[in-house]
Image (cartoon, rainbow, N blue to C red):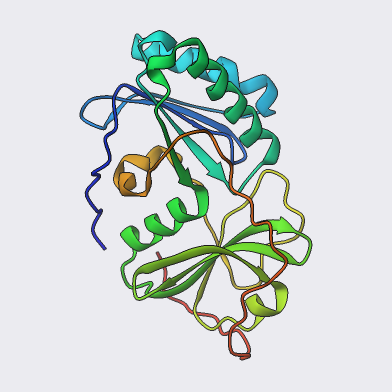
Length: 228
């Protein structure tokens, strides 16, 4: 699978903020859609977000007033981290209205796209991350194409017959599924999959909002030895 072209009207420099994972990620994309600076900072989002933004802007030799667009992760992921990022972006864009151009991406769609880029042989796979006990956010990969971000239950995962990948969350409610390959979340690779960015009028976060689980034909899970 090759990276798709990015066609949206992205004004740069663009500030990227991702609070979905176990650490806060901040980056600045330049005119060539390459990083001018990036920072990945561990710790609680409340304490680490603003220092990370300050460090990144300083490294890029930019101020918030010079930012033309905001790119943010909508989730799924750390609720506190995502909400803090949303609040910060909404505040900054009101202080500098000319920068109020928003683009969102989904953390599972990002990770699933990178799976396809790194290992095109993974044509039948499932990527899951914690949502709540007995339930998982999930993206199905079929023939190298990504499905929507859905919710699956433990039974569906146990009956899955393809490759199984797990994306950890900041506070996991449960252990990774058996036979799952645990991934490292990699927002720094966003430039490889900029086609995922969706322009939006305001900052809105992902929410499953459903209790209907996706089901697959019952069949005991089998381990697959193919490696990334």
